[in-house]
Structures are given as structure tokens and as C-alpha cells.
Amino acid sequence: MKILKKIVREDNFLSLTGNVVIAILGIGGFALLARSLALEVFGEWVLFIAAGSFIEMFRFGITNTGLIRYLSGADGFYRIKLIGSNALISLGATIIVAVILIACKLVFPEAIKNSGYNMFFTWYPLLAFLNLPWNSALVVLQADRKYIQILVLKAINSGFFFLVILLHFLVVTLNLNQLVIALIIVNGATSIISLILGWDGILHIKKASVETNKILLHFGKYTTFTLIGTNLLRSVDTLIISLSPLGSAAVALYSIPLKLTELQQIPLRSFVATAFPKMSKASLQDKIDEVKSLFYTYSGALTYLFVGISLVTFVFAEFFVIAISGHKYLVTDPITGFNVVAIVRVFSVYGLLLPIDRMTGVGLDSINKPKINAIKVFVMLLANVIGDLIAILIFKSLILVAIGSIFFTIIGVWMGMYFLDKELSLSFREIFSKGVLFYISLFNKATHNRYESFVKIENNIR
Image (cartoon, rainbow, N blue to C red; front, side, top):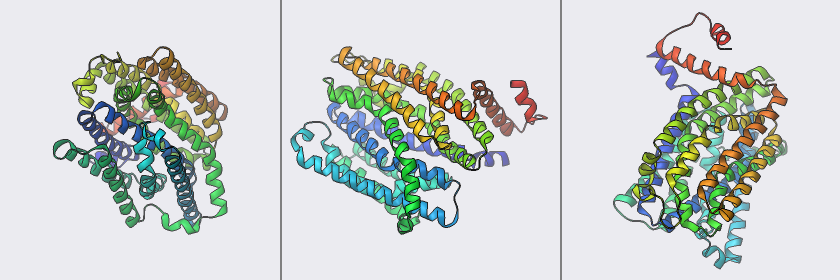
């Protein structure tokens, strides 16, 4: 019982639990909307969410990664100044984004109205201000490794909006405009809660200093691009498809397998959320061996886990498509000729490459090499865009768009390992041996088994 309590309170478990709960609510809501909205309307909803996610990478990317890195090793008044700078810079970025979107709406009203992004330009400026406090709270809580509070905040936000979607599906049918308004109200309520609990740090905004502003902005000028690029790697497919002759219907079809990749990303996001503060703290304390050990352990453990996840996704692709969107997306679309199940299987292969690719990025940021990580992401993004244009404009194929994801991720893995090896002198083999040790250790804790020497096990595996 004591071992079980220890595992339940462990950072990785809490982070994973939080992401599993949020993913279930998110995918559940997505599935209900896919079943209840017309194909074109559902495509507009997907575009609203995709565009909002992209903009939020800019808003929060400026400071979030830098704040987690420096706050993980800070204390006293310096900590307060960092939190104040985060609040100040995030507010400034939100104002800039809102002004640009409103100006575009006023200058190009007809073009925006006919583009499929009308809801985004109309409502996102308001949403941006209302979701600012609770998103700021998340990054402060992550730096402090307070995963229970993160779970509470995310559950409130995702849970209430899921209830709105459930009511829409079962009781009162809402149009797209009403759904977006409900999303705005839920985000505003979540922010009010974070303000009342004092988790967001907005009250420290007056404590921001020129020094801490510069520190976060210097680090953020690279991580902003990295986060935007990372988001674009997920959303540029949707963007290019939406602007192509394939239209909103193809966006809706492609969004189903894309959403299923979030199932693969649940443990990845969870482990990364715990790995980055630990690796950053070790780096700030010049504990390079500890940084390497953490990189090996997380990369190896996630890689083995993803083998199982990808196998399940590949074998049961049809079941997942039915569970998410119903039978109407199961067969090959008679108009476009696209097969959602085939795309899901391609994405299951793509998932095998994600752990090492993501962990090399985390490693580079944690050792204060965000510029190199930004270069890595830029090359991956460029490869993805070129691949998408060839797949859509020349071959008019969604499955080739998915296959392109495999190739640009292979490029990312190679570049990440190359640059990180130059800084840390890595051994590729250690990733897999440390991954095995992670599961052996987990098994021992669960079964109360003890080996005579943990070092002896490590030597045997090597």
C-alpha cells in the first residue's frame, strides 16, 4: 500500500493522470461535435481551434519555456520578479495579437468572411484576454511541479466545456457561434478561479524588472519560434488543406486521424512536463551527468511505451475511427477518395519517432541551447511544408501528407541527436538500456522485489 501511495504521488504519474483526464474530455467532446455538426460546420470548428492554438504558441511561447527553466532554480525575490515579467510580457503579447486580428477583420471583412476563419477573427481577441490568467497559472505551477493543481485547473476548464458539448448533443442543439461563446465563458470562469487562488502571478506584474524581462525575452526569442514551429508541424497540414481546392470537407476528414494522434501524445506531454524542470535544474547546477541520465531514461521509457501504443493504434485503427467519429468516416469518402483508417495507420508509425525527437528538443532547451532547437524545428517545418505542397497540389493525396510526417520527424531525430551529442557526448545505446532499467525499477516497486544491486542490473543490460 505504501508503494502504491508513493507511485500515485509521483510527478510522472500525476502529470500523466492529468493529461489522460484532459485528453478523454477533449477527445470525447471532439467526437460528439463530429457526430452532431455538418461536415462543413465541423471543418470551421476545427479551423477555429487550430488557429487559436497557433496564436497561443506565440503568446505564451515568448516566456513559458524560459520561465520554467529559470524558475525551477530560483527562490526569494528573484522568483517574484520572474513571475512578474512573465505576466507583463504575456499581457503585452496578448494586446498585440488582439489589435492585429481586429485590424485584419476591419480591413478585409469579405475575404475573412468567406475564408472559413470568420469565427476565429471575430471571437479570438476576446478569448485571448479571458484565457490569459489561467494559462499563466499553468506555467508557474509546472515550474513548481505542482501537478495536482494543474490537474484541477485543466479539469475545470475541459470538464465544464465538455458538459456544454454534452448538453448540445443530448438536449439543446447549439450553433457554431453559441459553442464558441460557451468556450469563451468557460475560459473566463477558469481564469477567475486561478485569480482567486493566486496561482497566475498577475499581482506580481509590478515586480517585473528590466533584468528579468531581458532574460525571458532573450530565451523566448528562440523558444517562441520553436513552439510556433512545433505547433505548425501539427497544424500546417490542416492549414494547407483548408487553403487548397480540397476545402473544409477534407479538413474535417483529416482532423479525425490527427485527433487520434493526441492519444499517442498523452504520455509524451506528461513525461516532458516533468522532464524539462528536472533537466533544467540539473543544468543550472552544472550536473551534466544527471542531465544525460534524465535524457536517456525519459527517451528510452517513452520509446518502449510508444511501441505498444503504436501497435494498438495500427491494429485497432477502425475501432478508434468509429469511436471518435462514427461509421460515416469509416469507409473511403466517395467524393474525395480519402480513407481515414489508412491515414490513422500511417500516423501510428509516425508515433514511434516522437519520443526521441521531442526529448532532444527538451534536452537542448534545458542546457540553454534554444537557438539550436529552433533551427532543428525550422528545418523540420520546411520539410513538412514542401512535402504537403507536393502531396496536395500534385498528387491530391491526404495519405501522402501523413507519410510526409514520418520523413520530417526522421530529420528531426537525426538533427536533435547530432546537436545534443556535440554538447553532452551521448550514447544512442544508453537510451534503450536506461529505458529497460526504468521499467525494471517500476516493476520492483510494484512487486516489492529487490535486486542485490541496481548497478549490477545496469551492468548486465549493458
